[in-house]
Length: 410
Image 1 (cartoon, helix red, strand yellow):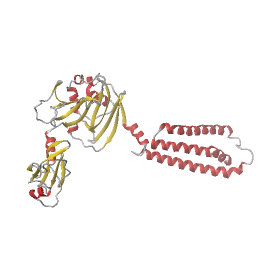
Image 2: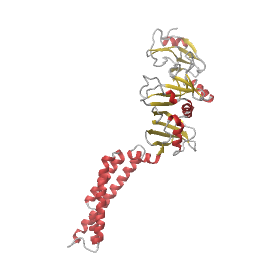
Image 3: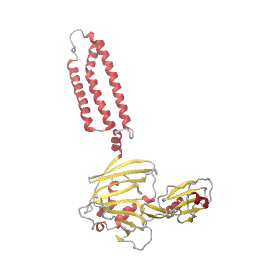
Image 4: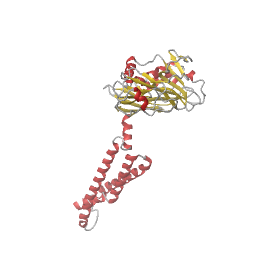
């Protein structure tokens, strides 16, 4: 009886079974590590389908012939062969299954294979129905309302890099992408990567808690309020009708003293251009509206709501950091400086620029950078260029030594 059992078991786990099982596992590992569903799926499905059919057939034969000998004659001679092969097959199946499980586990680890991406998308990607599709009617707030129907976004959000949205002449949103950061209930920063590309649903990727540098210069709320307060449909009326328009936002930005394309935004959709004779810096939470791909030929419109400003605490903190220098070389706001001690330092502020070249002045401080005294208006006269740093050839130099060593005039 035992001979019959081993003979049947060896028949069930014959070498072709091991071969087809190994082929299926090989392509399953390949799929998990490198992806390629169309390339690997036929082998996986084909191999395991053959095995399934074979096992069903074996089960049918077992119940049909369980009371009959599988082979006539002296089957005892096959006992040692069938028993040996059966245990060899068990060992091979165990090894193949263990190795396949290990490789699947390895591929499931972050950044170790395509399987990890599938799992990450399955558990961390949410879909929200997009119903507020008209930017004129719903603004940016409509997008957030649709997202919050599926994902509990924090009330205060920050833009990680930018917010880029495309829409057509009728105001229908064609696409948008952004990454938002907010604090969860445990006061941990979480990122939400958001994508939409002219579909019925918005894709929200939950990145999970992590370290993110945020400050009020990247607040999302100014974008929401500015889009609500500008006459967006009128603003794009002069753009070509068959073009796609874009809204772009990075947070608080400075446009220097160039007023081209700048518009001040007041409440109730009142928009005005700045005075041409103004010498103020054009800075604020800027929302750019432009024709996609035509920025060089059709100037973008940049809307700044002057009622949305940085807090006094943030400005004070920035001033403190601006006046904080390390010993040795420093670079802040494109100004190079070098401090010999905590109090004494020199810097090269840019005084003018033309055709890729710059003109510098030489300044000195003896109070840790709180105040600077200009000791040479044109240290490189008559030459211009781009500074590559400040180097001291001796450990102790006074201002006249510094000028002579650097080849600067008194």
